[in-house]
Figure 1 (cartoon, rainbow, N blue to C red):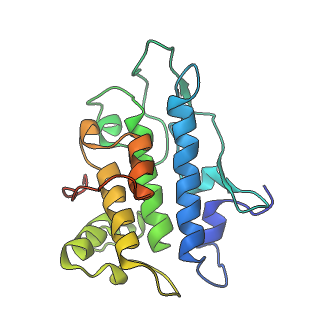
Figure 2: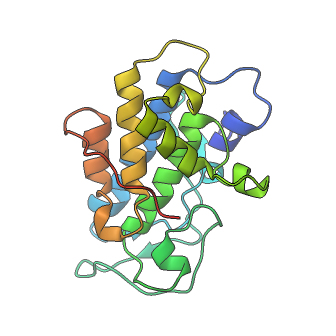
Length: 207
C-alpha cells in the first residue's frame, strides 16, 4: 500500500512521531479488522501473526491487516484448533509458545495488545530486553500506570487527553494477560477503546 506498514511509520526514521489521534485511529482500524476476521465471517479466521510489519497503511491513512500466510480457518462449529508454534517472537501468546493450550482467537488478541503497546510508545516490544535492561517495555508501562506517570512511556509531541491514554493502556494490558480467559474478546476491546464500556484495572501482564 502507498504508505507502507506500521513498522515504516513508527520505527524507520520518520521525521516526527505520528500524532496521537492518527495512532489511535490505526489501533482501532486493526481491532476492527480482527473483529471482522473473528466474528463476522461464516468461518472464523485466526491470523496468527499480528505485528506491525503485517499492518499496511493505505492512501487514506486506513490500516489494513495483511499477510495471511500463517492464518488458521476454523469451521463454524469450532472455537479452537491445534497447530505447531508459528508467528513472530515478541508477539506470541504464552499459551502457544509454551504449548499449554489450544489456538483460539485470544492469541490474536494478545498479539494485538503488543502492537497497541508499540503504537502507543513508538518503541519495539523487545527493545529493552534485547538491550539487556532489567525491565521489559510491558513492565515499564505497567509501572507507569500504577504510578500515574504514563507520560514517561507515552511518546507524543502534542498535548493528549490523559484519561484517553490511560484507557488505551489499560485495554492494552488486558489484552496481554497470561491466561486467555482473562483477555477480552476483540469486540470488547473495541468497545472499551471507544469509551462505550468501563475498563477494569488490569493485573500485571504476562511475563
